Amino acid sequence: QVQLVESGGGLVQPGGPLSLSCVASGTILSILFLGWYRQVPGKQRELVAGITSDGSINYADAVKGRFTISRDNAKKTVYLQMNSLKPEDTAVYYCNFQVSVTPIRHSDYWGQGTQVTVSS
Image 1 (cartoon, rainbow, N blue to C red):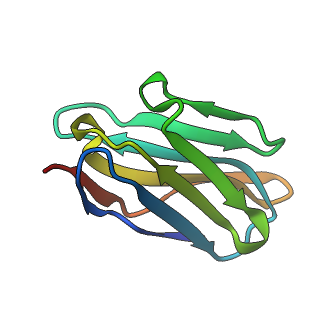
Image 2: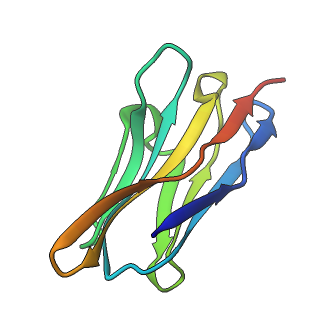
């Protein structure tokens, strides 16, 4: 069983930085996709940033140029560096791992969520 543990959320002033990390435990054969999503009450969870197994990265338009996703496959960890934060970035942030756990089985895992609040 794969479990994800997020860390790094909190309260930050507008314009400030914040860094999130998400580490996986358990057996992973290969990592297919790593992503960060966010959700605010009453809205659907949205993709913030994602990185595929070949290293392709995509960002939501709202965070381009401010957020950076990175990974350390050996440590089974994905990071999200958030700079120039805005109040509208306030949300619960979730990491997502899409992995192969056996040669024929792919699975999708989510972190527990971490609150990011941008406010003065």
